[in-house]
Image (cartoon, rainbow, N blue to C red; front, side, top):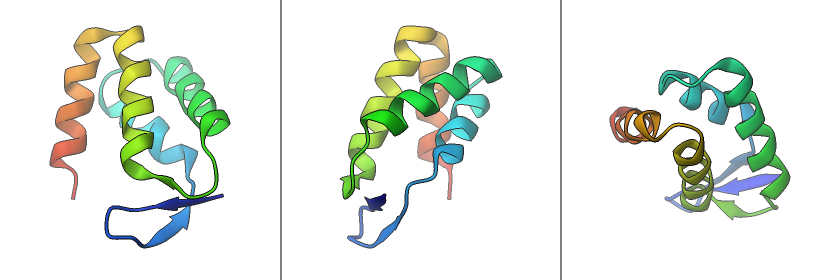
Amino acid sequence: MLVTKKDGSKEEFDKQKIINSCLSAGLAPDVAERIGNEVENLAYDGIETKEIRILVLNKVRKEDPACAQKWIDFEQNKT
């Protein structure tokens, strides 16, 4: 399944990126894995990274509102 990046390029969907960002925000490994699985199940070929970020953020907010801000900070500061 391909993901459409902000610049229009495409790359393979990588659930591990979602898991890693959740772990960096302070979520427990089992929660990060579950969020990764849930987003993978909702994703479709051509999904935009923006939509993936919204899905992840909404799920992180439900799990742990404090981690949601950490997740936002992580996403804004990654290179």
